Length: 480
Ligand SMILES: [Zn+2]
Image (cartoon, rainbow, N blue to C red):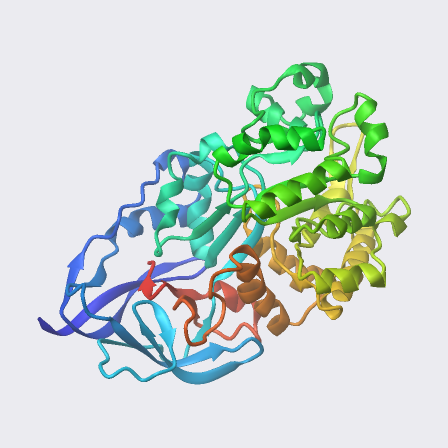
């Protein structure tokens, strides 16, 4: 069968969603319904998601009927982001992989009509997409934002088991799950996960501490207690049985670990340094990366000493602009080592809003703008220093019901730390590469996966252009 095929592509904007048709020339194409994505109405909480809900099952896609031959595609008339600017070019792909060779046969040609092409985004720090409920609410958000690569830095292993395989397809978003976070007995994130596991409101963290302290509903699922290198040795096989894609550890006030651990309090500490070191050794032997939650500059240094691969926060992300910030400040030697060890750091700067909040005695709360500005200035300065030293910055907001777009916007609009081009490179190359270092993603180069977003406007001239994604292509195939 030869001729014209009209492949529907949904053009989305913040407020409206209309259907357009992209003209495709093809050989041997047939239509079939894509794998259904099921969303329950009950989880849809705004009009945007409702629209997506109705459109996704309608999506039709062209698939090649002759499975034995290579499917060659030409993408013409696009302006492609090369890491710093947009350049006019024609790109080719063969079976979903970019090729710089002109194929002997072109099966499909897409006319990109002078639009702006960027690689898809990553999210290197979230706890969303860790349950069926979260998936139903947040997966449409991730797709809408053009985020194809996501790293979950601690989740209930039991809550992802029944859908994890759905994300092994080339044509869905890719998720790396850390599963349970590794801490010492009663250390962070025990209280947060256990409070939720009991079914209590988060405020019970303060009012029902005794009950939470005795509970272990989420142990060996959302968190693991490791109090010595021997514990690591004894529990490692069980940890690996949950099949984590990476390991998340907690380094919090680590130099005071013994004192805090023995005090009987909860949550203000993580692993002891020598236990964390045993974890990193085991993880690397198992071929897994280790990402560390850190609070202070000392925690960061210990992370470098023991060889972690990335940091879930920039020290100072939780500064309240009241105490002396010196304990958060990295020195030049720290920066040089971090660059040399090729670690990544997710600043999670958007927490400045949380830690600059005033809680009044009458129960009301408000962001203290003056404090927030001082935190912003500190985080801007430190993030710039990391970048200038050659340390990789990755994007993640670590906020519930948000994606990494919240952090990307915050870095651009509130911190004003990087220009649009630098931030775009961080969001679409550095971040995906930090999450899946073995993959060829985030660049339009020979041998890289043919995944990209088509924008109606130029984001280097207008940041809001990132909300004008009209086409999303993953591994050579339009997602919707
Ligand atoms: Zn987190």
